[in-house]
Image 1 (tube, rainbow, N blue to C red):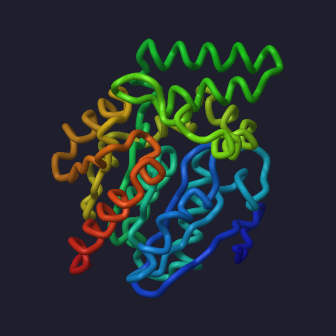
Image 2: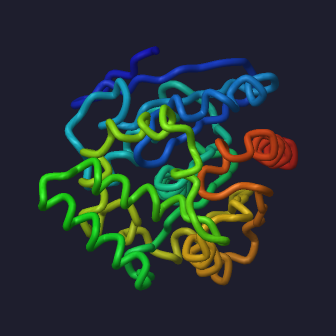
Length: 273
């Protein structure tokens, strides 16, 4: 992986292909490798940049609660690696980071493609979220951090018809999530500048005038869909796309449909300034 040296962290990133850049931001409990199954197709027509957020993968750093740090890292990556306005693709908490940067620095972003972002999830908490948070904290206090992480993963990948995408994965794939219990538990400390981006106003997101697509897994959590609906009411110009046969792990559950959705989004915005 290449290295982007910042003042207090080395951000590790990979690039593939050539053309207008696509910068991809992973969510919680994974690293930039989560995109490996979709990069070959997307890099056929674009320069695809994936990276490990600080605290994940090879971007070693203590667990981060303040997500303004992740936004600053993305800004640096766009300025110093992409070096031109990029299609920014953000999944889950990475989608919140992408929106925060688009609101602050629209000059760096050609378009937004967001997948299942939990925007303002703290203020829109329902009983399922509260119950998950209580179970997670209970396991954490008992000294069982992996069990706490699994509570998060089962909730976060919940499916409309019951069950969750995490439990449907092969055991070896499940275990790739487990090493990231520390950053996930830090992120799930309720915090104004945390993973749900309560510090970014709905007005700021609604004011983003860039080409903007918000993808949902067709089988994903109704709570995540409601968070999308809250934004859509304030920003009706956002295009909504459903990824068939997918839950929260859309790029893993249905990679071909995910790739097609991103490609169509990029093609539709090729004449955008």
